[in-house]
Amino acid sequence: MKIKRGDMVVVVAGDDRSDIPKLVQQVIDGGQKVVIEGVNLVYKHVKRGHPKSPQGGRLRMEKAIQSSNIQYFCSSCNSGVRLGVRYTAEGAKERFCRKCGKSAGQISPPRARYAGK
Image 1 (spheres, rainbow, N blue to C red):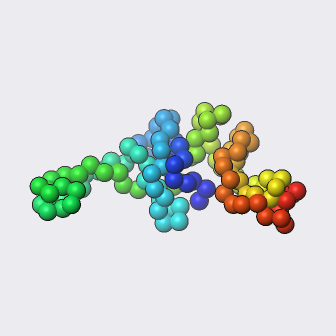
Image 2: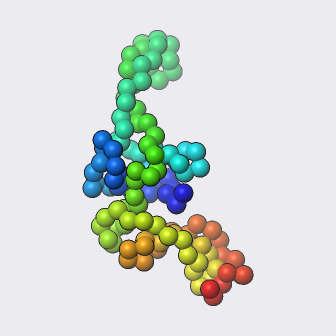
Image 3: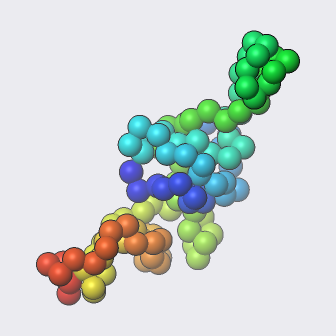
């Protein structure tokens, strides 16, 4: 999956669908599921003696959602977009916006055999 922790994403399907970008907190199962700040909030009922809630009760927390329900938020396009992967002139692999072509960050170091492609 091309989404990483710290990316801004837009939820495009489900109850929390919105055009407002949210922050990815965690990527689970090799990119198949993601935990997003303020999305898919649920209550977890805990017994007394739990480290986060010694008196017991209900904890409000985010649950993971399927990564197919989100899109990367491109700041130059100002919308949710698909990401692609390409090699730079130095041979490094990078993510890029498929709509405008803007780079979304490097994902591997430069390698000589991919330089100039």
